[in-house]
Image (cartoon, rainbow, N blue to C red):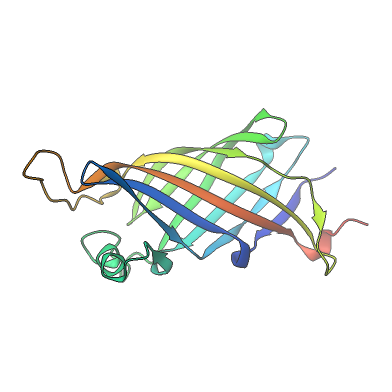
Length: 183
């Protein structure tokens, strides 16, 4: 089977993050618009490619004032850097439906290598409209400071208001490009 190209289904994909708040709890948020494509070769995963973009303006932590602060120059600076981008460099199978994906993550104009752990790649399934779909999730951890997200406040009791380590998880549903729909 040749490589198959999939579009990321924006309506059924999103990216989440989790970061420590005040050294005592986690704050979770999400970006609701993820776009991009995956070229997947099941027989030769190393020749596969992933390109994803996250629209930073869609950030939601369920707290509007915090969301506006995260969009400001203190954090993502959305007016100058409207997206977070990931481009794969190497994909290695780590199990029957899992992969280690090395690539470059760009946040706020800073590009750094990361490794995504991709799990749960589903077999293709036909939706009610005849499209072939599959899904997967990807997870990584980053230091936000290494991407220029340095704003913080020291706490009186020690530590900081916002943790440095961030867990990122992307949940994606992929649609096979129609010209490649299998019979």
